[in-house]
Length: 546
Image (tube, rainbow, N blue to C red; front, side):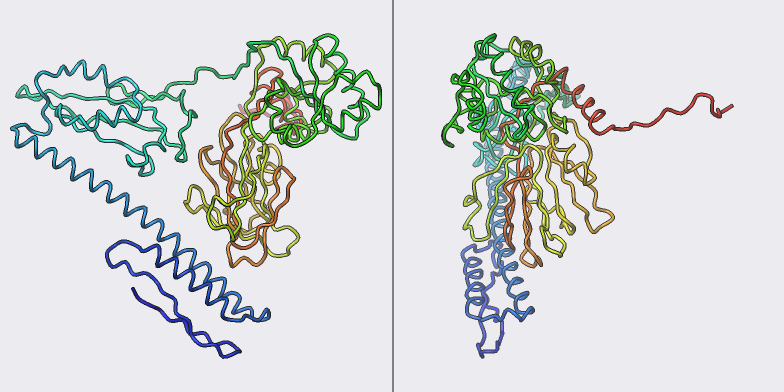
């Protein structure tokens, strides 16, 4: 353990402070020592009075904070790597000891007992196995002359068995040599691993092994269909505010659904007041009073009907912090990327939807957490925010460029220097991300769009990342100004130096009803809403190649 002295004399005559730093004498980092080093940096900053006019001392103090955090992250990463290496070393020594025991018994490690039926073993090991079953066979494999090896993702070991999602197939290959002896190759398996959580996300993605070839099963259906097992009983109607035509249509639709379909109707408190001011006939309409009733609304409502544009769909989705009922959206606004139904035929549309089956589009949402620099750990976060379109990090009213450090699953991606960054879902690919130069993506493609806003670089191109990653955007300590984050255009929050925004795919998508199917509705929306690739056809009487 060494001590490095930092001499800094200020205007008040303060002397020197010592900063302990770790030395890897035995290859292991002492996390407690690094904690004391970070504490020493904080004490140094508190003891040294810094004048607001002294920019050099301010930059120096911010650099010290950055160094302290980097030391802490490096210590945690190295400790994890050392523990992982120790685990693999233990496995190797255990397997070597088992092989030596077999040799003492007069058997080679690769031999198989003669009483084992290899064909039965192949038939049994070709079936899917759970992780605990695979571990039991792995522990007993050497009794049969087989040593199984695991192919794990991201260095997961048996100590993290509960954090691995298992969809696997095992295959035992046998080779007959010229002398008649049979060699059995090592068995193997592939495991699904998703952010350390046990999930059914990939339960339909079956991977098979046929004679050494890895094959992924095709999708069972190209379009998701919803079929009612029992008739819908309750409908929530949400409308665009401050529109007389929408109020008239809402009253007419509620009257028709009550008289002809015998449905229970829920509306917002604002709409409830508008209906009762028009007529006392609408006393049967229900609403909610506080936030607690909104949290349990998905257990009472079978279907959501929106009257407005895409903004009304965003507002309806934001009402549900968890599961979302199917949404039927009628276009009464200026944008119609998520509103395929026309209000003029609402009776025929609702009659068909209530009978079912209907085609739906599962629109993925992102879950965003703001982690403040003052938080002791990453679990001390603010309340998560769900977004259907995008989360935008920009420079706000500052005249300086935004300075953002971006990480993807703890791997450094890039440093954004420009007006900001957009993290968008595929449903939001036709919104702000498109205006910033991002690609249009089919809404059922699972992914996260990484789109810069006016970057100060000619080589900064947008990215499309897979759905299972976690993206962290952090404002560095040497940033010249704070950043601002907005979520679907609302809930604007300031991100000071050291604050971070963590985004990942939420487990609750937004199901929206299709007029025809997901692909047809998407192509129609970009043709009608954006006039995509619309140009005059070349004349047939022009010059031709001979």
